[in-house]
Image 1 (cartoon, one colour):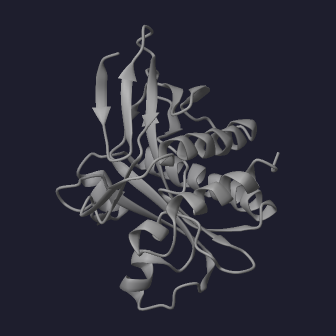
Image 2: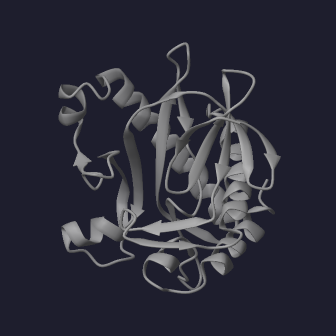
Length: 234
């Protein structure tokens, strides 16, 4: 298979059908834009299984994603899309960079969810953008921006309910979007603990990649707890 893209945590390969790609989840763990790195056995498998479940929830709710089907231990089949170079972040609880920027206490619940945009550029450390930047630099037009926000809030509503059923608090998450060959906007990339902050609702235990970022515990143990719980959520 010909490799067409490699990121920090995934590799995309061509298939015999030009409209589809194979997404391979790597065991690589990175933080702080690659400044911290490790290879952790089973991380890719767990992320693949978690994203299969979360994308299944979204598809069942009528949210279009690039996910097609599960094909192997570390791989899924996805529709080929042209990725919009933006990370769309939805926040429900103060954590991470929001806590630093605003001087707020970690764990404080927000009055309502907020959406932030970040330009996908490792060289620039993924700077935060507002909607004027996005439009003036032709990253996306106004209609696409509004549609991304609309879908992001829908995704947030659904994921909050699903994770809550599993006893998990959805703190914040990152998603990405792409357009298919007809120009239709669809959810792409992944929904995994690599880009989603997930805390135990009763104990506050961190279950996501912050365990690796800040040495808060074994990464695999956290991911396995997430997977075990969400498997029971229909």
